Image 1 (tube, rainbow, N blue to C red):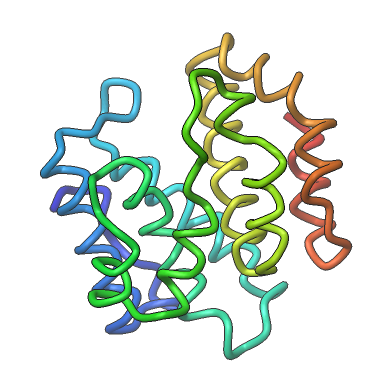
Image 2: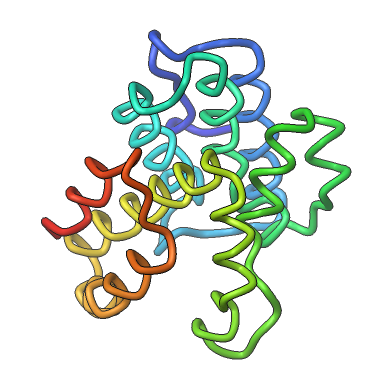
Length: 178
């Protein structure tokens, strides 16, 4: 665990704290980095965007969706399985993480194909977490990695076409500002 792992007092629970610790341990255990930083900086940014937009979620969705903000990359990046996530964080979190796991592919386009987006659209909470992830990546890139920021700008029309949901309009609107 590192200094990036702290919770918003308004959105702190045993389930969210468990997911945070699990995700941090998984990413640290595989030496996953975000730029030259601990990967938990990215996970915290995703969670922070989740907290910022939690008012767009139904009350019963908030806890497991914010937990999924922490764990969203565990299957894709840390050699964890659906069942590992389910055992540690529960069914709802595992379903979101599974939906957000890229397809196999050599390029960004192959990994984020129609099947991938279809799986995300099937769960509105997965769409929410994917938006938090994209907001975190895009905002970080604008400040630190202009090459990636340009990639996200170029992908935005397709991203929006594939995932737009009126429920999350304020999140899509924020993406348009980067």
